[in-house]
Length: 599
Image 1 (spheres, helix red, strand yellow):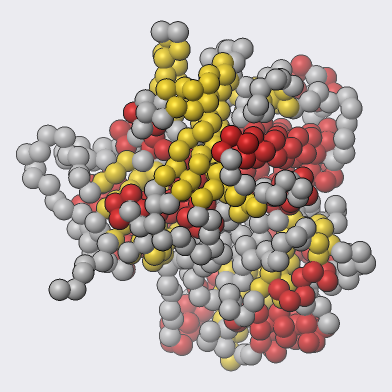
Image 2 (cartoon, helix red, strand yellow):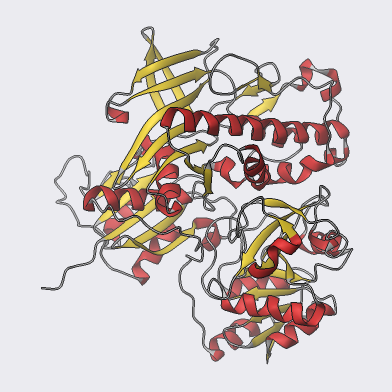
């Protein structure tokens, strides 16, 4: 008798919500809600759940990740189900329970809210290729835990966690830093009794009223004029700043084995954000009616939080290796997306014998995949070590006919013509922006050649031009996609063979900056994606053709979206984006079509 497949759907509920569908341990698709709803950072992945029906009409398990339990997810009228269980039932994905059942708890639904950081760790571990590893999770505010300290109730939030991970399904807590609203001097508890929520494991825990590493970064992000979730902008601004001796240290000196922050300077607002206490320091209180990023105090504060936080995480990695006895390190959580810090570790830890894997889908959407991987290994006890997973082209499959392409284009008065990559190279060398749409969308925030904007990196005005077209700030850096065989001649990867997922901002080699000024940041770095034909054949061939025409094996690459918008998901999204900006050209290499939108 043929064995029925095991279908598991993972859900990430919060901001950057998303859904992952897994069949027999393999990812079928994974997508963020924002790509479908077109609302940045959107939560409540209901539109994403509908995608499951395109692949199966039944699932065996629905595994839900968040920072609070399903009790907070909202209830359906009459039935009283949480919205996710209820939607899955209504779609026929899970069994319809008897209507006289009082609790409406579906046995196929599993709430993993008590393990938010573990879901980050599981994803990174199972994709790392390591047989065993120590996971370092640096995040904003993970799971909310109720505790009792000296008889008083206390709510705390995960900020940093360390786990020892082993096959098939071990993720043992070794350390947690917990943030709290309560004013405390700080309590470092060795051999803390984890209780039910940690399967009765003992571990070391720091309960702190200080901002966590990411919370400090969020505070500076707000200080620079953005919402706390836009920390990538602070990372782009940091090299415009410099060391400033008049600034107090963001890091708090202490004799603890894990880092903490200066509460006089950074005041947390758990669970959401933190603030720079500028009123305490007059030189930080300078304001402007215009662009505050032009003020030196904002730039210097961005410099300070980047350099100090990356050193704090370096120290945390060293501590993780020490307490675990393991030199295979996987990194995830929001701070894992800090490609400047990721490059810093390669130098800071080069003599430690530590091997690092940084998870490219480190944002909260990745916990949907982490939940699916976790549940698969728990119930199957599958101990097969997976090879390293560098593939992030995990979005749902989209296919179009020539008629369908023409119909969508006609909605925007766009012209569709036959084209080859040589036509695209001609447009680019004539200093035109060409967008690229092919295959399955990339998971995570990086565009890697399937939903990309391409341009000539040799244009010295390229940064300003593309930032203007995309409606982005002047200081935002761009990326480069390079043929893997040429990367070491152009960039210093600090011992890495490749960088396929653009998780590192690397130094260019001497003499390179003037060759590709369009993609070199003010500090001489570039976010690099190495490309092979096996990984992405169409994109590889475009870059190779560009090299044959220009001698440069690199394409200027940035995400296919406008400022403040999610990456495009569908062909309609792509053409509509062109209709709303000054970009004219869209190339579909799978169909050999060029779409032109005249504005």
